[in-house]
Length: 419
Image (tube, rainbow, N blue to C red; front, side, top):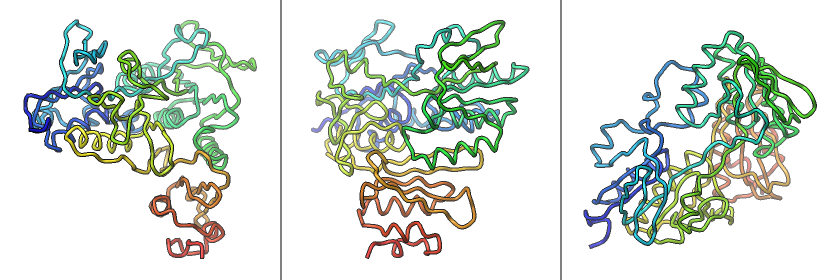
């Protein structure tokens, strides 16, 4: 009898965000008859993360409106939720985990979906600043909402011009912030993930909506007096803030895996089916460092798509069916009335094509190439470009870049092929 058909087996999952929860349900669907125990230090019923900086931040709805699954779904599938419980260590020799309360839980298969946590930079005064928060959990959003509502002047400083910082800036401006200032250390926002053309577009978008984007700003100190913060940059400029949001990146939660002797390289290193160097332990989601066959290199992704798809592959493997994880990554960001859809990975591009759709300055796409190979596409308010880009990234067909850039050429795949 295989493990998946043996109801005496126990699969333990550490982490109950997108990856962990989707793994648990996929495992049951794949035929696992044994116990499934899901642990997470967050006491809240597992919820969708992307709406935190957007819909949840700007609405009066409780986090339960953004739950990944209703509570009864876990009961129906006999998935045991252990929320508000911290896992302290993994004992591979005895095949159990140690919980913070001193109890142990044995496992036959273990899945680490520990995700990541916000990186808090070593800035003087950051620890004592008033109303300073990252944005990663429902508790963070609740704290931000409460601080914002209590503030009279509602002046906000966002440290970090990545997607989370920009989405949060847009949301707080929508809520009525009197002044929102984004401080980005690099020479442009989104510098690590997109082209200068895309950075320029979003800078203009935020400026149009009353958000101050300041680049080349390295925060050196935060001075707090009577609950008012002065955010000091190393150029001597100071910015008053009643609320500070820190969005400068994340730190991958690899400590449990490293302590257990699992291979670590920019995350928990896994094989084609999300298995670590221990055949009974898997890692999925933000914390995993996996091989992408299409780009022929190991990558680590912070995306819901990766969490969901990789979880399904790992579940199949646990149940004895080997599947190679080879999905093309995709992402999205919502800011004001703009939807940005991204597919593929632009790292390594050496030329790009910008396609503008008619006279609309907020509908265009940026196509990233390495020589003639299409790597990725950023589509602004243009789902068609996203779909066509996905098709060509997967197929590897060569495109005629002149036709692609020419908005007078009907936007159909057959019209874009290189002859």
